[in-house]
Length: 189
Image (cartoon, rainbow, N blue to C red):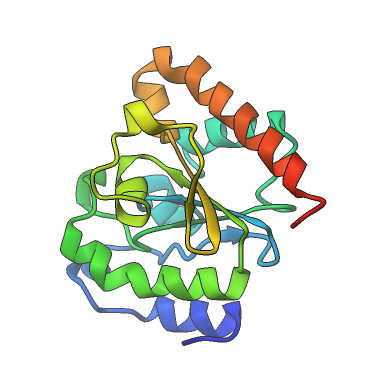
């Protein structure tokens, strides 16, 4: 267990627990405010993220930033963004269950350090790993689920919205729902 992000990042950057370490350029630990009340979690880094060492920096990241900005959130100010796996799966494939298991302790440490009140799972992989393995993202996106000490919400992954632009209005509605609840909770957070 790590007590701060400096220790966690240093250890994570030298991780060789699974084969993803063999093809990575950078370990993508996360970005944002480590004191944030809201933690966004995706599945894993893509090519741009692997090259730059930061989550959600490609086209999907630009869309995510626009949606965050629309509800007064910013990756550098009031949220933290991480992923289930910290190294890019080849050809941006879904991270395999065994890769997720090898990497999940890094995320658990991040959650312990950040102590978020709300966790937003971006996409099916994240939502099924963290909320419910049987979760259907197309049916359950935008709903809040209490799990332990956390209020969790599955949302469409920004890359999925780029592939299927018809989901954009629903995805934006999810951000509005999230924003409304998060604003209501600020006095209680």
